[in-house]
Image (cartoon, rainbow, N blue to C red):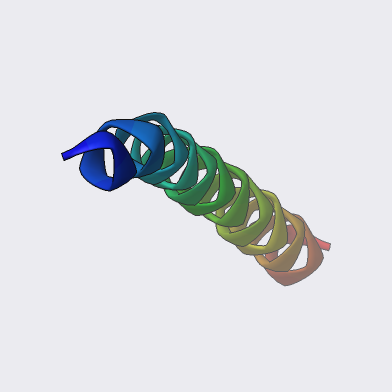
Length: 42
C-alpha cells in the first residue's frame, strides 16, 4: 500500500515530463518547418 503511494507522484512527474518533451519537440518541428518555408521563398 505505501509503495504505490510513493510511486504515484513519481508517475505524475514522469507524465508531466513527457508532456513537456512532446511540447518542446513540437516547437522544434514547427521552427524547422518555418525555416524550410523561408528558404523556399528566397
